[in-house]
Image (cartoon, one colour):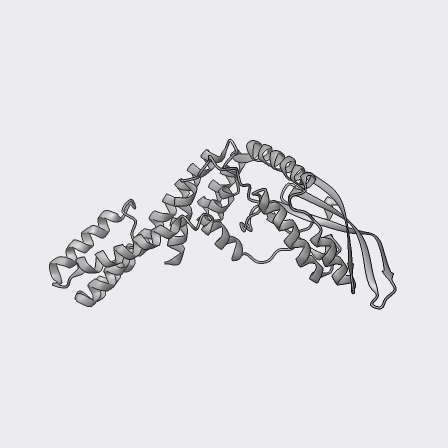
Length: 310
């Protein structure tokens, strides 16, 4: 039943956006060793430096299914060793930052910077250089601002196609994927409201489908054991049915039937579980991208081809 609460969490989040806040654009940070030309150990430092810059501008996300990425390529301009002891490795690196769309292979913005690093090994020299990437650098901020503007233009022109694709996915009962796709649209895009309305429609459709399954579980539990134990088990399912669901009336009728035959305090059982449900509801707003994150994390790891950015 965890999936049900994830869907509810997403629904409550997407229909209650705080639009007065600065628009956050779902962009994921992608670094591949083949593209960055950086050893894996050094990549962690590069990742952290770029992540801080993106987070400061409100663009990075854990939504793994967004097609919009931020990445980097690193070129060694010069390297040499200063004799010791201890010997020091000196690296001068050229770093090109990109904001791009991996689906359309469209580059929105790029920015080139040079940094130098010194260390007792090549790895430490890389690390020292990446630490010198300043998240608050005005040119990096300008690069991100330019990219954000072009990304918004992209979604402004493509949101109708996104809605169409989401409808197609929902038609194949791929509800999580459909909602995740709609979540990729930033709140400052002119198509945001329409996308969120579509997400609500898909949520309602899936909610009713899931609630019908829950009702079936409750009916089966009661039919199998028409006693206090069976009533409690059935009640544990009924409390999960959304009051706005199309099967809520059937669930209420089943509860009334059980109360006629069982002298157990089913009302107490329902009240207690209702309190538990309310406690969960208070946490829902903290799960703003619950479905998108869950969906993305469950996907098979895919290698993102970035060679077209060269």
